[in-house]
Amino acid sequence: MPNFTIKNANLYYSDFQALKDINLNINDKNITTFIGPSGCGKSSFLRCLNRMNDLVDGARVTGKFLLGNDETDIYKISDVSELRKRVGMVFQKPNPFPMTIYDNITYGAKMHGIKDKKKLDDIVEKSLRDVAIWEEVKDRLKKSALGLSGGQQQRLCIARTIAIEPEVLLMDEPTSALDPISTIKIEDLVGNLKKDYTIVMVTHNMQQASRLGGHTAFFLNGEIIEYSKTSLLFSNPKEKQTEDYITGRFG
Amino acid sequence: MTKGVSNTFKKRNVNLTETIAKIFFLVCSLVSALTLFIIIYFIFTNGVPAMFQVGFLDFITGRTWAPEHNYAPQFGMLPMLYASLISTFFAFIIGSRIGKWCAIYLAFFCPKKIYKPLKTMIELLGGIPSVIYGFFGVAVIVPFLRNNFPGFGNSLLAVIIILSMMVLPTVINLSEAALRSVPKHFFEGALALGSTKTEAIFEIVTPAARAGINGAFVLGIGRAVGETMAVIMVAGNVSQMPGSISEFFSTSIFFAPVRTMTTGIALEMSYASGLHRDTLFGIGVILFTIIIILNISLTILNRNETNYAKES
Ligand SMILES: Nc1ncnc2c1ncn2[C@@H]1O[C@H](COP(=O)(O)OP(=O)(O)O)[C@@H](O)[C@H]1O
Ligand SMILES: [Mg+2]
Image (cartoon, rainbow over all chains, first blue to last red; front, side):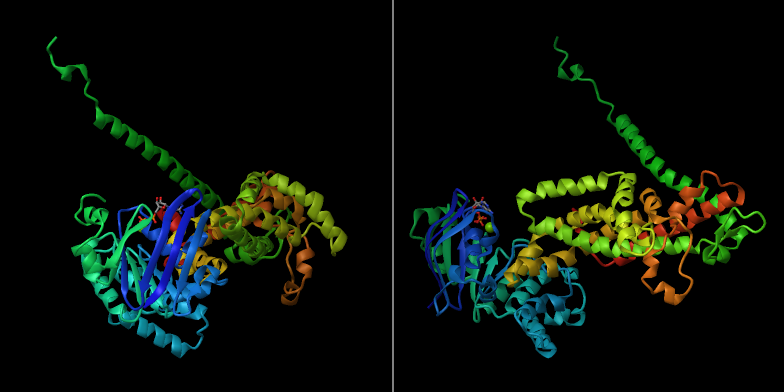
């Protein structure tokens, strides 16, 4: 069942067309990875899904982006805050706020109306357990989040995002700034999270895409060239361009 | 003709030029550091003995400044200390608030079209000599106060108003730089969690710029404590202070003339001699100490903060 249905989507940065007629069904409670050479529009597309491109001067989006069972057209939602509660985002570079670990997690929850101290405490513990760093940080919740290692920071950012219980989790190359061990940990974590969330992840790393499984879309020059089950796409690509890319002939 | 290419190039004496350059720049930086020490040395060697001759406590807490008295000159600088601190305090409260909000506007909300002219004007404001601010005070602020409030217009309030204006450019420019240097990913992270632009700016970005903004504040305070010329022109320059606690907490203090430490020094230095002259250096020592305390407090305040403006 699709959680996100995208129909005839185009994205323009002023005169430049960054995405061309994208059609895609993103499956519920599953993982979808985007691969493709740098500059082909993966991040741009991801940022369409939570309307982060609204910030960019001159960016214009056309087409339909239907979210959830209610098929809400996300570009018709007047309060983007409501959309971003449903569609969370984790960035390439870990970006915990310069405040305590505890405050990082509760920031979103508080904003979305949770005031009760006990409830906030529970949210903090649950989300940190979900990303498997509760044991590591439970004694320093009131310390600055900037004191954590890069991998811990990224997991904190994931925790901060799932603390507000989104339906969809967008991740833009979440491991590209991390060391190999932290990368594996994040991959394991993402593998667990896909039971509860619809995960959309950009990766520049094809091994990572195939390890994570689910579905994969191959982007090239602002278009989706091929979209299928990950195992199929890597073992038996239908398109010549996909084959060239995954066999390392370019990109 | 077949001597090879190597002879046509002269060997550069790299090591020598490197050494000379190093020494040259070292001397340049030593000169500025040395200036500081020379200043400290002369103020302290002139001022400290005078302070002790008067009696340190009498000097700091005495309320009468009568240096010209033939038989019993008195050197109580408390009224000047009071005037400097209270005028700086209020000017800082007003100037830092307005300055910070103005910086937030410039950094995040200002339409491109208005930004250039606005920024240019604020920079110009920072470049105006203080006598010109003084003129403004004499021509506008003082008459306005005289016509609408008790007193003659030359007053603590006039000093506060003019100092608030004078600290603005410092606070605005430095705070804006601090706000702009906060990495954009904090802002985006907050938006991605559902913050509005305003929430993200006030709850995440501005706190992240705290170290730089504190620095801006301290420089602003320094400017207010140290300002002399503009203050002379509007302060009334009477060395006096409230006589009682109840008077201190009444509004009348704002309409009374005051004399700050800097203006005290500037007004009397030209004719003072002997112990009188040395006590003026003593006031300088106190002023200097205040500035040092300010800078140390900044370091303590920013101990746990990241200063992105300094990092990049
Ligand atoms: N804010 C922007 N303004 C203008 N062009 C942009 C902007 N962001 C990305 N682009 C352009 O859009 C194209 C796709 O970029 P991006 O989505 O970042 O690619 P990817 O993530 O696949 O590397 C690139 O050509 C890039 O230069
Ligand atoms: Mg990208």
